[in-house]
Length: 77
View 1 (cartoon, rainbow, N blue to C red):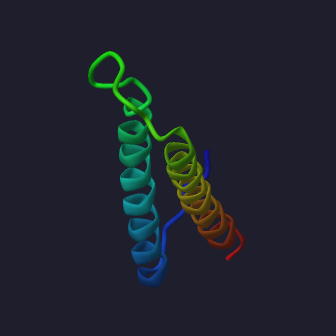
View 2: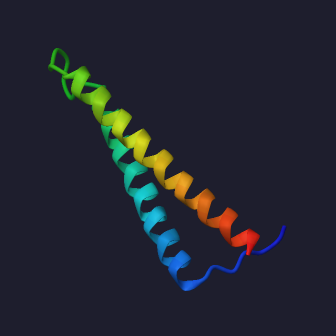
């Protein structure tokens, strides 16, 4: 497996992308836990919850795409 040595700007972008990925995954986990009401009969706003889950998934995909773009660009150099 070839090693990719990242330049300073790319390294900062990788760190930023990893932070977004980690935060979004944590938030997605938290949002998914909300699908189970804390007590029987408690109301759950599934429409809002669905929007939140979609946003988390989008942020995860965005961070993953950034990481792929960076590593692909670095391999070409």
